[in-house]
Image 1: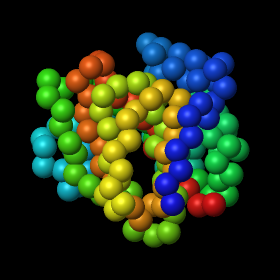
Image 2: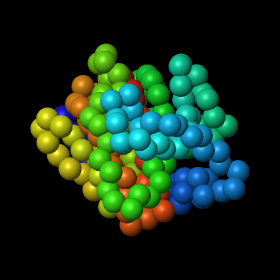
Image 3: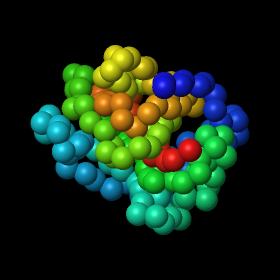
Image 4: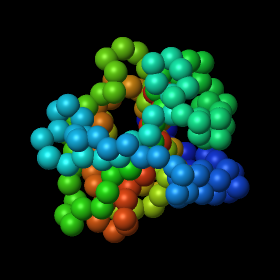
Length: 162
């Protein structure tokens, strides 16, 4: 199961999300590796909105409820924003799964850029476009890449049960 939907948020909700993250008051936290399988040597920045069965951010209420409603989420497992800085050459990250148990994964693209989301089997290369979401079975191995045409590649990653 792979579903792709453009314009999942209203224009005003999408603008609000971008304004929140562009604020001088939005905290990003450095991670020194993309995932445990990645050997590129690159890191990224993240902001956990929901983790370990609890709200983990003051920004949760401004960002997550609309996604939960639109995706018909019964139980949220994790919600985080990821910011991958621009690189001079495209860097492809390692394939992985977020969790080994049954769940659904969603990747929401916050901005347009030339980085990609890769799904391994069946292989699919998905171009990031702002306000587009990709929903897939959490058992699908997936990977991302950096971008070279924008200052950063920003996504919202959701893991949940239907």
